[in-house]
Amino acid sequence: MKFLRPTIADMQGYVPGFQPDDVASWIKLNTNENPYPPSPKVVAAILAELGSDGASLRTYPSASSQKLREAAGELYGFDPSWIIMANGSDEVLNNLIRACAGQGQDVGYVHPSYSYYATLAEIQGATICTYGLTDDFRIEAFPRFYHGKVFFLTTPNAPLGFAYPLEYVESLAQNCGGLLVIDEAYADFAEGNALELVMKYENVVVTRTLSKSYALAGMRLGLAIARPEIIAALDKIRDHYNLDRLAQAACVAALQDQPYFRESCRKIIATREWFTRELIAIGYDVIPSQANFVFASSADKNGKRIYDGLYERKILVRLLSDPLLAHGLRISIGTQTEMEATLAALKSIG
Ligand SMILES: *Cc1c(COP(=O)(O)O)cnc(C)c1O
Image (tube, rainbow, N blue to C red):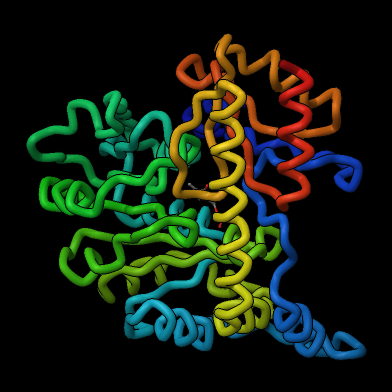
């Protein structure tokens, strides 16, 4: 197609997890969504914003998302000038590359982690460099000093679920000449996080999402925390009305209802720990997880066989085609009842 840039014509495009049409007939454990609904206050805030006749939708939403920045700032302990809101954290990941890495410049990330970084880098014509993992989950051959423009670190790692120790992440920040983007999509399910490194190092950016821990994947809400100079640059290049009115109302209500949020995370973590123990008891290998999913493999290391057995029983999990990952499955943590059904299904598959 002669109208396209060659990079775009040649690229594969990212393939998101399968969203079945008849979602109610599945136990859906394939895209790390929250099995519990968002806070009732979120629903009330959306309805209040909409009003009975929808007249609020006539006018553009706030372009600055200032109320959201204030709510997030208060929650995370940063001035709002250190925070940018995004239409899903995917948007801000994209804008970080657009702001920092151009044609032919290096963007790095760990393989396996979130391969969408590669798609985003490819769109900019940036050069992608991936780094493997050692057996003890450290980055293999991370250079003495990283000279690329951006390095993405997913912690807790997806799809494996482990988190890097903070001292290790700090050593990467010190040895990184470009931006170190710490993608904390799952940090709310983890014991720690790297927010203090944002204060300490000018090259550290932390991204978060409301998709998983706040049960708002359908609203598209994410954010980044970084130095005001970086935030100001991201502000220049985003769509000016990147968050719609209903998403803005939902976001403030969600961040402010911390008791509901904490209880929802607590239940998921408790179920994750229970499910991990049960899987081990039936002979599975399970990587200890700090996220809302586990990566597990059966004794015969045949992910496809287990995937198919679960699929027949209307349980959807994620089988990753990557040869490094095809021996296992990434299983999102659902409700306790859903995970009991999943465990029973795994026992019957054998
Ligand atoms: C889910 C996920 C995202 C995307 O989050 P959205 O806010 O829904 O765009 C980013 N990074 C990782 C590692 C994720 O798992």
